[in-house]
Amino acid sequence: MTALKNHTITQIDTGYKHSLILTEDGSLFGVGSNEYNQVDNSTIELHLEPVKINISLIDTTIRKIIVGRYHSTLLLSNNTLASFGDNIRGQFGIGNNENQRLQAFMNTSQLFENCKISQIATYFNHSLFLDVHGHIY
Image (cartoon, rainbow, N blue to C red):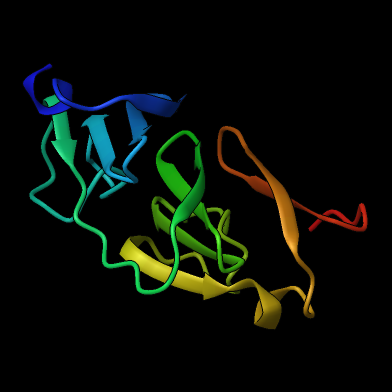
């Protein structure tokens, strides 16, 4: 895994056919199927080696990576979410079921009535969001 050679891994999460890797310096990598752009915005191909995911983050950092079957979600330090990949069952909670490319940012304060998301769980075709007050969305 040449791309990760000089990086210290701090988080990893896996979906059905893909994984995301977060490193100590905030770099994000993906590996596996990219059928729904759940790894990056490149061609829809299989990434056999980790590829660096270029994501433009201004005044924020990735706090947590969460991976579902064919979708990925990033919880950012400014309380926004970035979700990308398969959204056919509306697993992003954005009011539609259109697949999203990388950087389909969601401002959680608009979607979840000014709550602060503390945890995210994903599975097959769904996502759950838990706020600091114990409310689930």
